[in-house]
Amino acid sequence: MKKLRLLIWLAIMGIIGLSAWMVYYAKTPLNIRPDAQEITIQPNSSLRSIAQQLVKQGVLKNEWSFIVLARVLRKESYLQAGDYTLNKNINPYQLLLSLNHGKSTQGSITFIEGRTFKQMRERLAKNKAIKHSIQLLTDAEVMQLVGKGEPHAEGLFFPDTFYFDRNTLDTIILKRSYEIMQTKLAKAWEARDANLPYKTPYQALIMASIIEKETGQASERALIAGVFVNRLRIGMRLQTDPTIIYGMGDDFNGNIRRKDLLKDTPYNTYTRNGLPPTPIAMPGLASIQAALHPAKTKALYFVGKGDGSHAFSSNLAEHNRAVVKYQLKR
Image 1 (cartoon, rainbow, N blue to C red):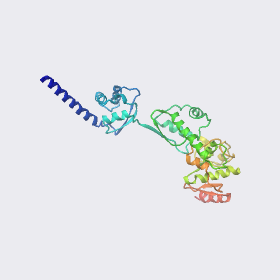
Image 2 (tube, rainbow, N blue to C red):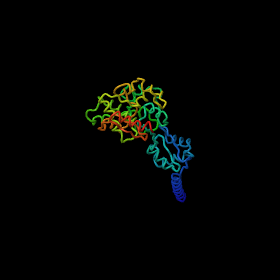
Image 3 (cartoon, helix red, strand yellow):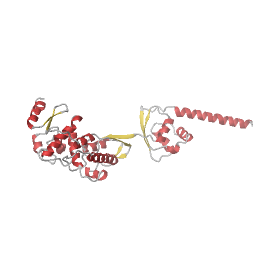
Image 4 (cartoon, helix red, strand yellow):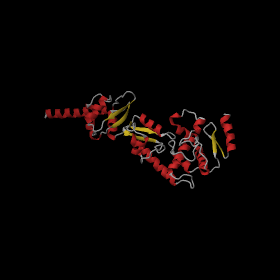
């Protein structure tokens, strides 16, 4: 009986000691250096493999303590793979909960209004959280994967910030942006003003891209749209510099010369009537709305004042005076 009591007492003390150690271990900060660290847990990893990965990445000093904690708390079957950002003061219990709930680090990318598809691809290529697959593909080949096989990708993607799990394919992100643009454009087209000089939503998208590039102040979008719509209605050429610049491509060095205005290209709206063949940039929703709800104005001209705003004129004489005032004398 004495031996039995001794064994029971030793067992109780052992349980108390183990419990005390577990509480101490679970609540003691890991003191990660530097202040935060990104870790990766590989897919299909066992508890032992996860512990080994944490040791290898400098998060844990040994495997067995973490393994014991996970098994006692019955968390070993629920730990998830992924990328995680750990703060400096995280403790083993918090780490276990993070792995249990799959609170992995997300990647993000922002596509900006007014940027071209070329710039969009460059931004994708520089994002280290993305799994890259389109570097060697042409724009047309990319569109075969993410769109409906359109030959030109320009303007077909919606500018926004997109969040995703790390190692998401670039084509998946592009497809999300593409589908959002198609949805928003179709909805905006259905609610458009009557008697606009566009035959298709795509033509409205082309106009929206021009408005996006011409607008310096958001409040002027509808007015700028009104000017271009007025020109289309009377058969006047759009004569907008951003289309010239887009048509020049890599030859544009920051200045438009007279010979550039006279050189005929599909995007030269000084030499050709109507809209260019494709959008020239990625328009935002505000520019799409402006294209489909232009301001009621008599203006046919506008010139930059130098502060991002424009002076609008309804005739050439008035416009020429504005050019002298805001451009030649500035």
